[in-house]
Amino acid sequence: MRLTMYTDFSLRVLLYLGVKGDKEMSTIQEISDAYSISKNHLMKVTHELGKIGVIETIRGRGGGIRLNLKPGEINIGNIVRKTEEDFHLVECFNCATNKCVITPACKLKNVLHDALDAYFKVLDSYTLADFIENNEELASILLGKNL
Figure 1 (tube, one colour):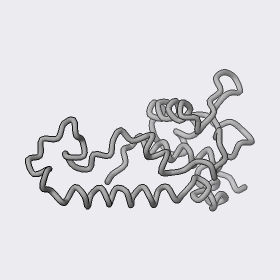
Figure 2 (cartoon, rainbow, N blue to C red; figure 1 turned 90 degrees about the vertical axis):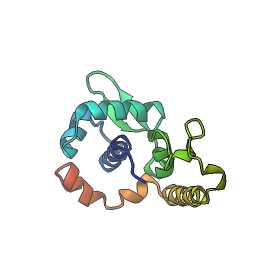
Figure 3 (cartoon, rainbow, N blue to C red; figure 1 turned 120 degrees about the vertical axis):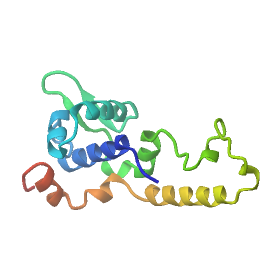
Figure 4 (cartoon, rainbow, N blue to C red; figure 1 turned 60 degrees about the horizontal axis):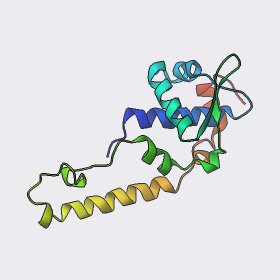
């Protein structure tokens, strides 16, 4: 299984905002600079994260973005589910387009379903708080300062 760049960037935005804390707003440009990734991609990502209620977005002078929930309330499995298009590991996972002739007798699909379930069980056991426990080290890298 491979996550899309969109989900990767979504998780990176949340990590950045988690490290920064809720004391001050962050900008898309700041995050883009910190990770050396496209500002345009981040605009789409932050818009979606705002729509699902994970971050707060404020327009205008003095505006920016910040976490809308505490890091311990942001479940990683939920974020991945909401930012990925689908989890069709193989053709038969998509009932609408499946043309695989062995689907009725295939046992591989059951194993892959179990694997996908295990994947989400692991992701569901983590929150953003788990990934920012080393806040000082991350802040030094992302923000260029020691907290």
